[in-house]
Image (cartoon, rainbow, N blue to C red; front, side, top):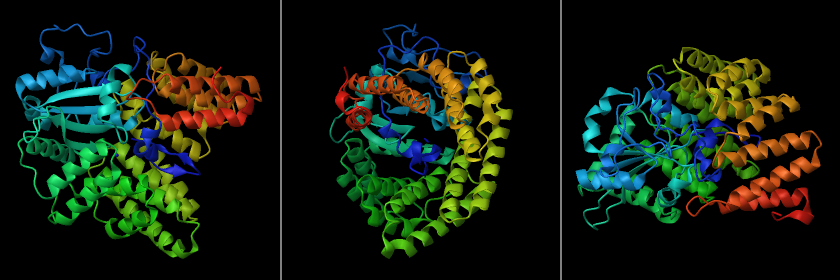
Length: 503
């Protein structure tokens, strides 16, 4: 599944992917011109990039299907940031809609675009679906995001007509995170089967779970997932998806003991794709909450040891259906677990493997946006290895190659912050703030406040914390995040109890 692990309470690349909903979705009314607004930008840069972000569409208004565009090496034609048009096109063609909820900062989203959606096997699917790409940072997508919320980035839905109820935009299938080719094809087939009324047994219960989770009904979601797994045949192709969803649901419901029990039972049943890592990430997040319980200590240690063995085997398997992004996530999780087991030399060796993997992928990337896919994970591992400044030249080149992208500048600001080069950190973070839009601005404002705090600039820190509160207060329905707003207010109040509210 984008952007998950937790180290010392700080989300790492993999945990950010699983728990990214908490980061959430402020948006400006219009994406700044030239920013990362196009689905498929990574693949598109193998040819001329086709812009179709907000305010850039020039297709005829009479035919919603005309808004679909095939970009670069992408196989499927996508309608960008216009779910109503996609639904209207689907109604005209009597096919379901595949929705990709993505964001420009999500490295796993970009990896899916450049490593999965470019595969020729999807050519046969183009006539069978309408494909809609929604940048969740945009206000224009607020209603869609509210109705079909992401559990992490990316989250995919198949939506369409439920022939039993007549609902025209019902959830027919759902997939969270990185998918292998086989997994994404199985996800598409599940959507078609559900629309045709053929979902039965385990598939029917999985569909019930997906619909409940979309409505944020975690209790029913867990019940349906449990029923699906109980009924599933041994060779059920969606078992890894269901297990990963179930353990994530238990984590969100704070059923840490149940989460541990499920992990002990099913750790080896999640296949060889990204779901295997995602399952372990949720499991380790659960046992973090149990590690202070002496009665659980032996079970927690045994599970960590099993997880290490599982990830070591997975990352050593060259034939596993993992992208570089997926493999890097697995290595990052592995090094965290090794550190938890006081095997730091092994963790460092794993980090060196991860660094070499990412550096090689970036060097082989054929376009600046493709190289940007690896920026965050490279930053994370370089900081872990204690050499953040060694990555600066590569990030500076990324910023130079992508003059309207905020992400390389944001990463540079973070690298310099970790290296205690505060003037440079402020300069690059300010450059990113001038380009960023939507929810990512809250993250960068917080980064800027942290820099100000380290500079002993109390007024600056207070200003940026106030701006974070204002940003979360400005969110439209469907994108609001009450938890993030509450946390932002608490942070501001702790800084200055007399000014807890926005001026």
